[in-house]
Amino acid sequence: MSTLLRMEFNKLFRLTSVRFGLLLVVVFPLLWAYAPGIFEVYGFFLVSAFQVPALSLLSSMQFLLPLLVAITAAELLGVELSNGTMPTILLRPVTRPQWLAAKLVVVAVYPLLIMLVFLLASLLAGSFYGFGSFVGGTGLGDAGLLGAGVMQASAAMAELLQGYAVAALALIPVGLLSVLFTVVFMNAAGGALATLSVLIFMQLLIVFPRLEQYLLTTQLNAYQTAVNGLPWAIALMVVYSALFAAVAVVLFERKDF
Amino acid sequence: MSTPAIEAINLTKAYGGRPIIRDLSFQVNPGEVYALVGPNGAGKTTVIRLVSGLAFPTSGSVRLLGQDPHAVPAVRRSLGAVVEAPAAFYPYLSGRGNLRLHGNLAGDVSDERIDEVLRLMELDNAAERKVGVYSLGMRQRLGVAAAMLTRPTVLILDEPASGMDPLSLHLVHSVLQEAAQQGTAVLISTHHLDEVVAYCTRVAILEEGTLVDEVNLFDRRERFRASVTNAAKAKALLETAPFVRHVAVRGDDIVFIPTDADDIGRISVALAQADIGVTELSRDIFDLRAYYRERVGAERTRRTGTFPAPGPDGTSPGTRVTGSRSTRDSTGGE
Image (cartoon, rainbow over all chains, first blue to last red; front, side, top):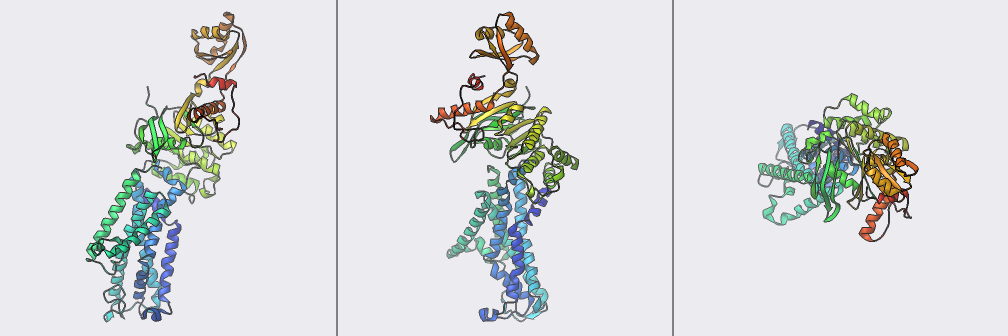
């Protein structure tokens, strides 16, 4: 299994979508850090480096980050299908669940990795504003960017770390869903497209208030507003992840290659 | 009797209700080279994928060394296979890097063994180059090298020689032949009928997923043809001779398989002593190409009532070949 995991991580960093994604999460925060018209458009000024990560996250969590994660997850499997390497590997004494499990682990780790880079890049982009205590909020707490008085640097950092960690956890089921759809369609484009379609469809389901707390898309906002609290949101993310991974493995075991 | 290395039992595969492989049964024994030939779309690749455990049969079963490859994945430790044409590798790794990766997955493959298979397939000079820049033929040779990596007892290769120059083609066939001589069971699908005749033990002719015929080339290579003055009398005589394994009449000729090739002199003497004149005696060269066209054509005629007999490369030949010696042979049902 360790050979397979090493192999999969090695492949991850060779994927076009990963390289593009990493570039994007490095460049994206610069838009917020140096946006000259931010007051005219949004009515606030940035006063701390700790506010840039929140703006980066708020503006990308609904579509951009799920898109990056879904495409990467689909590509990780799809590239093996398109160049024919998967059957060759499956002829070795490696079971199908082992092979797919290695991919699922990498797909689950990828959001953590990209969010870490995103956070660091956002802090770096906002370093111009300084890392000291400031009057206002990070944008991820209850008081938003305006805050409630002076915010200590350590408290701001803790708030950002928690927010980014929860956002990363929420992206894991998105990646696993993309693997599941790629297994179903045996095609990377089909897998990514189906995942995004499901997410968009789920977002429409908020018109059924009773469903809202169970939706995966609701949990994508848990870094800011966790319906029913954070433990509930995290529990749902784990359930969704386990479900998507298990179904992907079961379907993959019965596939013809 | 030893366990067959590969066994397909009443194998049927259907996609969307449409059968691709129909009730196919065959065995490949250790030390044997078994070739699947047939036009494009005949189902050769599907058979390869079914017997290597990559696809699941709709009905019937597959055994590798007596085990179900789906139920006992460990049996694949004894398997070397190339199921993609051209063989698929990670383009960003070198030839050696790809083999090392395969070795790690298979376990217990030393660097010396990797060097050995690279030398065997004449890739030692290109070992450090990325596979992305390999030619089609080099990639195919690397595929055979990867298949040979674990010294498998079963080799399954889908068109291992496609896209190869004549020298590479000869190299691959030599390597496979040698592997079989050392006891490996080899199953290949191919369009190279001339090479198949040279070293394969048996050939299965597939058409529309059906096994049209299975030809024992070993017997064919040992077969002799004699033009005699009285074919019926010669047949009757040789049928009782202890040094003749099989005899049949073909027009004015007889075709026979001696128990041993050295017995051919004794057969000549026996015929002469029975006052049967022999005007010509020669090894009977089997024309698989003509036989293939005949059998596939006949199958298509039976099935559709038309005759678009394909060439071995899957294209329509334009003219029907009939009446040749070997074609007359082929209808003899040996």
